[in-house]
Length: 139
Image 1 (cartoon, one colour):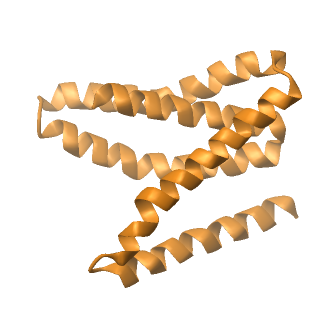
Image 2: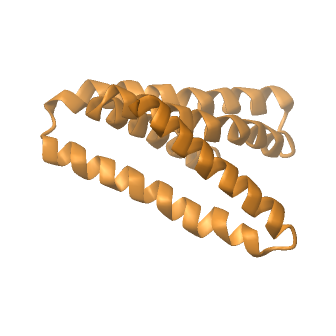
């Protein structure tokens, strides 16, 4: 579980770096999206880990997962300058596609469950928030 979460957070950091390489505004928007995703994920990760190990070990592993995102951003910002524009575009497309896949496969089906209305409302709040942020950042 830890290695999967660490790798996932590392990829989130790489996505942030890609966003900043394309445009500062896109990097900022990507960062806000990843942070909004990582905070509740960190709490959930700690809660899951604490059930299967000592509290101190769970805290250390949770911190490591949390640090993987900025590590991924630093790694990507280091090598992004040497990549062609086409490769950066491809990486951005893969990142965007990954987010869409996660939303379509994991989040949207939740709206069909018993509490579907509540989930749908929160999904719409998220979409509206992102639209508002993009309009605010793009001026």
